[in-house]
Image (cartoon, rainbow, N blue to C red; front, side):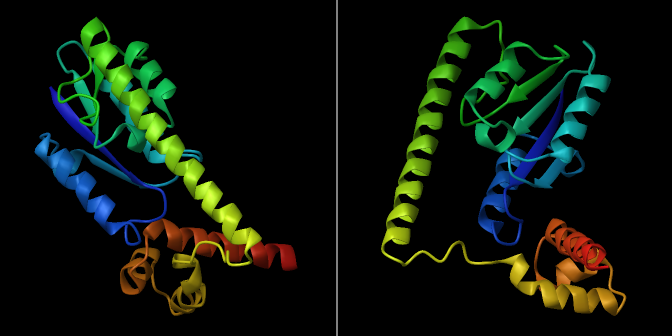
Length: 204
């Protein structure tokens, strides 16, 4: 069975370096080779081209003789919520593509195993509840800070380096080189350059 890994952070791999490295370590422990890692910097609420392309490729290539197991360190790295995970596991486009989510089960998930699926749904529901409570507490804290006049929003990360990104680009540096030199994510560099181009176009 081939094992593919999916890694995701919602900001960029520099800002969330600890989580990024933890995911890589978990996937390697599960037996995912470096060449089968699929990293992405994206929110689950927005487009995730790496995830979609990986899944489409797995659905295209997997056969009874070549089963593909897609691994993610945690359910929320791959899926928006428990319902999305449940749908992917129980109604796969290709039954030869299976999932391994170690925070739910140490074994590949088998939709035909009622005991395993019961445990997965129970653990997934608890994890979902904990995330919802965390989001609720965060929202309450932000609302209170706003009422007290203390809320300043999230501290800018890569955006704060926009002038440096544009300056290096003008000097002929490639996006990968800019990302490495400024220690920000490659996706952030592309986002800054895209926003700059769009801003210039609107100003014409």
